[in-house]
Structures are given as structure tokens and as C-alpha cells.
Length: 77
Length: 355
Image 1 (cartoon, chains in turn brown, blue):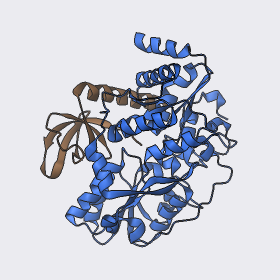
Image 2: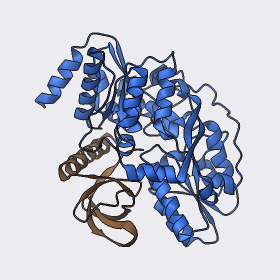
Image 3: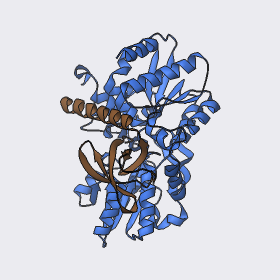
Image 4: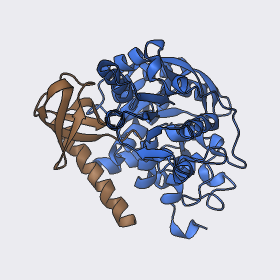
């Protein structure tokens, strides 16, 4: 439930809505909980909100881990 | 790899009887998946605590939600995990098959959108989760207030983690020598509450990440503290968690919610552990808006989820586990939620042991 996904901010729009790239997919999130997040930065996303700004290495590391889990779970099916 | 092995070696060298507990569903899954439990010597026990928000929700609260969805013109939006959780004689999935409008969403913002698209209906978001999730729900409520969305509300089952950890430490029947603390709850509340718990109860608490290496490192840090007879709050997950947490997110929780006593499955009523919408936000409180009373607590017959959630027994010690309770035919919430302890044990158990 507390799983969080890293994404890169592509653009910050009105009312603290941002377009983010999550592993190649673009989606919209709110950056109300990380108001200082800027375009080009990486955030950790949970339930449609960025909950923390993270550095690029941490974001890549987390994404790699999540993909590894997904692959493992797919193989288990 | 070398570092991982050296950590594992150091952990395997431990000879004392030590029980460590994690209190996060994501850790439950990560540990079960990684096989760490099988690599530890038998004197080190890894217990799962009350870390799955779905699992700790009381029967009365689930029955309250079922009462709500039976009303006219309600659209309930919920995280998927709640759909199959059994209430008394029904579940959200069953109510949906009987015609209730229940939709799965990933964000409370889905519910805001649904409210705007369905002006003739009341859209309720089922708010469940710990400090990781609650700021998002609080932010959505604040957005609804700013935009004056009249037909949006939240049924809050939100809980906060530290009071439950206090209840665990205070229970003489539960032996815990150290806590593997939840990484993403830590990202919001920071290290402070865990430092306080560690010093108050004399038990080391380490905020830990979710990769196998993180968990090994977290266990190693706990063992080191135990060895030195120390009890501190430490942060293993520094690449994500700032020691001060996320003050904006904490601020939103406190702005929108106030603490109330809450009933946890397995732990009973814990003071100041639940979150209710403040009077200023009362019109967004689904419980008040639709007058849902506190429901009586009717236990599920034979289900030992309460004992599992407090680490008093492990899932395989429940008489129902793998017999009448499986992920396909779950009896209790720890088998329903995919990150419940029972579901995690069952999923990653060797095939020959599945009956």
C-alpha cells in the first residue's frame, strides 16, 4: 500500500499539477506536497501525489527495483 | 554482491535469540519475496506487525462502509485492496454485484474528477492508509474545499503508525527486540517519532528501505545496536528519507485531520491513533454527511488475523491457513490484501507445502 514510484517532472502546470514521466509513460500528478519541485527533478509518487523530491540516482535505483519485482511476479504467474 | 554477502554473514554470526518486527505491508512482501527469512539462523525471528492498513481495519469500520454503499446515489471510489475484504455477511465486491456503484481508483484525485463529472451523485473516497497516504487524501480534501466541490467526501479509516508501535511495545505478551521501521511512512514523519519510541521503550528502531540489500542493512544496524545495548532511532533509507520527513505533508495531515481513538484489528482501541476530519472540514466527512454510526465489532469466526498482526503467531500457525483460508477463498483480511502477512506467506511458500 505504501509503495511509491519515481518519476521525472516534465512540466509544471497551473495549480501545482505536473506532468511526469514514469518509466516512459507520461501521467499527471499533484506536487502540492512538494511545492518546491521543479521541472527536470525526480519525485517519489504515491496515490497521485509527489511525496518527496529525490535525486536521480535514487530514482533510477528505485525504478530498477520495481521493474525487477514486476518481472519476477510476471514469471511467477 | 560482496557487500550483501558480508552483511548476511555478519547477521548469520548472531547467536542470541532475537525477534525483529517489520510494520509495513511493503516490507512484508519484500521480505517474503527475497527469501531473507529462510537465510537467517533460527535464533533470529522476523515478525510481521500491524503494517497493512487494510488488515488492521476493524470489522465495525468495514461494516460502516458497507452500510454507506447501500445508500442511494453514492459512488464509492476505493483502492483495489479493499474490494474483497469481508465485512459481516458481505464485502464491497458483493455489494457491487448487487448494484452498488463502487469503482477502483489509484488517487483521491480520481474521486475529485468523478465528483465533477457526476454532479447528481455523491462521490465518496474511501480513505485508508498510514502517513504515506494520508497527506494525499488531505490535499484532495483541501482542493475540494478551495474549488467548492459539494458532492465529494471522504470516509476516513486513516490511522497513524507510532501509537500502534507504542501499543506493541507496551504489550508484555509480544517480544520484540528491534523494529524495522516503514520507509515511506518515514519519508513523511521523519526520524523523530522513531527516535522517541526507541528511547522511551529501550528498543532500536531503524527506518529501512525495500530492496533486499536495504533490509539486510536494516537488520544489521538493529543487531549492532542490540549488541551494544543501545536503543536509537536510525535511518538506513537515507537516499529517500530526510531526517525531518516532509513537513508540508505533515502540515496537511494536521490541517485537515485530528486524532481520535481508533480500533485496530488485533490491538483493540488505541488512543489518538485514528484520523477524523476536523470540524472545519465536516462537510467532506462521509461518516457525518451520511450519518453512518459506529458499528458493533463482530469477529470473524476462527480467524486469527488479530494474533498474526501482533506477531503472536505466524500465519502458518493459524488453523485456517492454507486449508479453509487461501488467497482464492480468504477468510480474514491478512489473506485478502495482497500485502497481508498470510497472503505473503502463502504466495511465496514452496509449492509442496501448499495443501
